[in-house]
Image 1 (cartoon, helix red, strand yellow):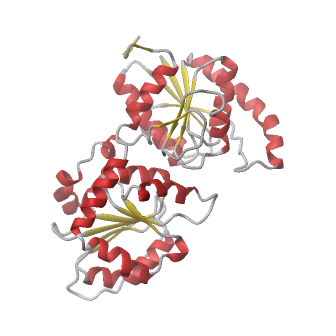
Image 2: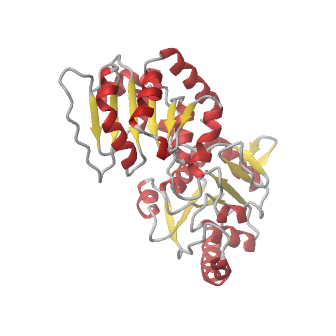
Length: 366
């Protein structure tokens, strides 16, 4: 069996694809994996690092919404679809799994042309154009939120890295706090804004740092590799650890009692899976998908939600500090998050791939 994964461009597309690749190989090491990407995406680094074969196709940018530019897409797509179909022929693909982004639509159209089963995975609550098209071409549609309006949607969740999906925060807490040079028994706030940090979060946290620490809360703050944060703190306060980037998100989650963060689809899925309460501050650009990503988890009781413009030092003082100092409330929110989260999305998606490819008979693979 050979599976082609189409999920290039950003880490939000690539990481779920790689998690599925790992799960497919755990299921059967003989399964062949080919990833599709473009020369401009992160996949040129991330896919080879994970040990998978990458085939490149030309990028065909798609409008985020139906506009006049959409009329030019068929002409620009034609050559890319032909090249993609040739790749499917070369690897003898049995199934194509798309995760959105530039490479997904050519992959869906090439799979349809060749009669190859396709599976669509949508990580965001508001799907992009490629997956809206793909979902109309197949009955196999996996989504990350129960609120999805895509046709044929099955609520599966987002495939996660095994270090996150299998994380026991309590068992790892002592190791994690020692790793980041934090005190072992203090309430701990994790602040992060994705791989590049978030200037707004950094500024508001800096303005509130003394209040947070004086409440007995210690902080682990990933500010982003291109950002600086200088704090003038009095002596004798709990630790405020500043790092440019977190290579060990599993340990960061294990060290924390709550998070202050953006609301990317992967962030929401990981926090829910590990049962870490969070205050979500959606990025105020795009089509509002980050707010939609966080809303189901917040409704389930696993987090708080505040608009970027409403995030102020006073908001943190009146909302986040009381949460961090209320162990009973933290425990209840963590339980609600964990009950909402999905740790087995990778295995569920493997089952969908096998089903689509006709490799499952009465629960067993052929």
